Length: 132
View: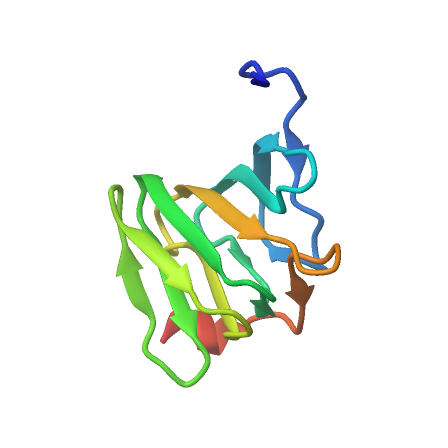
């Protein structure tokens, strides 16, 4: 058993603009040891903040724990997400997620690595895409 204590690692800013638009904080990044390939993080988006478009080779699950957010897969509608909602993005599915314009959002992200990679970052979500 391995326990990672709350605040054992300092909060990290989301690396903008390569990965995020706006102010993002990442806490409690969970690491596992091989053969496990799962990683976790608690991600907090300030109002208006969001990821860039991205994919995950083994998919991603997010569990909203605070605030209100939006999520979208390419070609689909922007969906409201609120505390208690669990969102699964399939392997290779191009998507983004983040806070709404006026409300922050926090989620727990669960991803699995394939050949050492858990995400492929793509282009930013435009303001027009975000606000529709």
